[in-house]
Image (tube, rainbow, N blue to C red; front, side, top):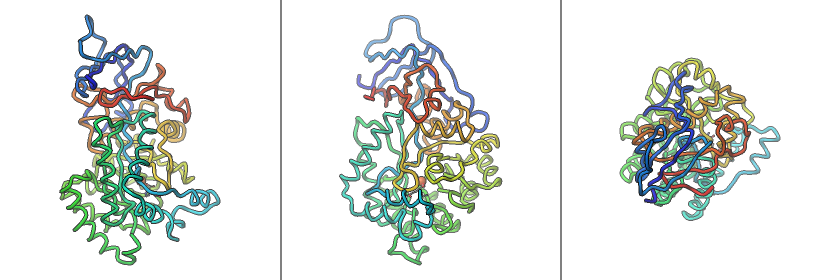
Length: 413
Ligand code: NIG
Ligand code: FE
């Protein structure tokens, strides 16, 4: 009964399908002005116009008159489990230091690595849950979470186990799709031994994590001064062979070839893409790699936004995500993501909705079970407080979501 819900009189707005929407398709949303959604045991069993006759028994009823019902948002790129904070680095950046210069002098990811190694499992879990509650209030029902702040076996596993523990709660507000990002930076113990570190990830970490079901995807920070294209190819090819979904932090700081590698390996997604080449854009479209754009990161790093408009026009499937992390982007704001995408990246509101729902789901290989309001998918929704979805970017940086529904459970906002 807890997961049986009838939402009636809603204005249902959703992309349709069980895969990413590409190019022009991103603009196509199904609109049902006076609709009903029936959720039985957490799964959608009806979605369509209001039905005549008596309401079925055994369901909680939610009257959503004059309100927009969207699929729950999928934030497909975050680093939500971490120790400590880095406010001093933020201040240095505001004074003109670059993200990479801070990393080169021992700050950045390695700074958070130290704090994450020191933090207890419970500290990390409590902190991650705090972000998850904030995300839930903004309509997020699924989030991708990366490891990558341990850079040793014990701490990488600690991060992944925190995510698994949060998922095990039957009343979870947000479900986490976990990604192993051991190749986020070179740990100090492996100084000048990059290839040995990649060997360690391939030989010790990937098989263990797979056997213990602790991560679905594998990611790498493929960037000048971090991991080369060749090292990334070696790691990701091994991961793919073991059954991981593949993701790449690509072309974030300079144009480096990570996007082309994502296309070559048929990765689920290439992420960031602030400096992607024209060839990279063409090859993502051709090879069905989701282009995951993170406008909050460009905003906080004072970098130009990714060429999202061009990517959509070139036929790519584009997803939007927050990149929540303690360094380059300490924000998980869905409202601001909508605003930046529409105001500065020239997305239509419809395209931004597709990017934060079905295409986000595709970027974590879950488009068959979430990301749209269709029979057979999970009963995950964001209910807006208004009857127009233009509110999402228009009410700039403010929350338009009145309530979030996770697998048929109405959550407090
Ligand atoms: O997605 N670029 C690499 N990784 C993160 C930043 C991590 C950090 O600074 O702690 C990103 O921007
Ligand atoms: Fe990231």
